[in-house]
Length: 185
Image: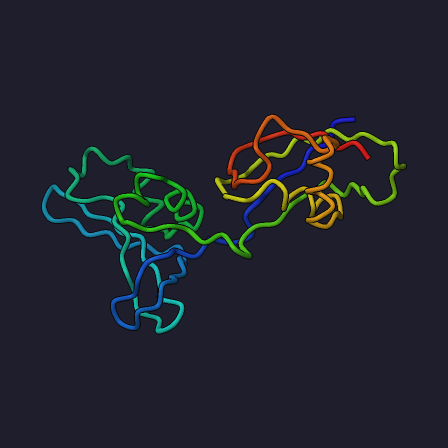
């Protein structure tokens, strides 16, 4: 039986960047944008607030771009301070690289197992699970498996060693893309 799990974001991740005011390294994005036009050129930033002192920093989204080359829907979403656009831009590797920031996804996601309960199953059961990521959230597959199946980390490691927990992907490192695994109890 194939089950479907989903890793879904619960809020925007923290932005890891050094604060120039207090030397903290965490900023919270609140979905606010600043757009500035100078004649035919436009600049746009995603505003982030330091979690320690509240100082505002700007993450560059558009820099000295011709206004006519920007899609009107994108400008409307920025003017409306669209939180979904903020989430999309934070996950964009080009924006993260340009601004030299990383994301901290701790406590910003949850695992949705569809209400299935693996604790009641027979010892001989075999389950196939497909895990889908709603966003590029880096998580260790073993953590998802232990959380979704109610296993301890040591028990999951033992099952991997015994060949009873198998996947085409490496289960020990972090992963942010869809994968499947099979658990034989």
